[in-house]
Image (tube, rainbow, N blue to C red):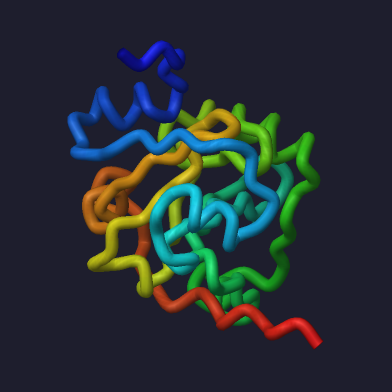
Length: 161
């Protein structure tokens, strides 16, 4: 029997009736550790990034774990010149989630979502709203439920030099 409390994120996915699995694991310190703990490839560990377009105006960007936001591509898609990533406290105030647990599901505000096109057709793991918890879900199902815009908004991670 699972004695873990259901997070707001998991409750939101369940309320929508979306097929998913909850994956609980110990603490992780890197993308490789997160992927191993979740039993997936690094590309399937989705980073949910909070991006600020203006004061009080945010969006979520879903990025494959092995990629990074392409600011020029994202600015062009959104038709804006400036964007930034808020600090951890501001991101928590905007979403209700701490960094490392952020997901659009169950966010305190339903900000718009942009999903990188490389997620389509894959089962991915998203933040579960609390530490050491992920939601495994078909990316297409999540994208549809979130009414996300799908576009090429990432670049490969740069290799460490």
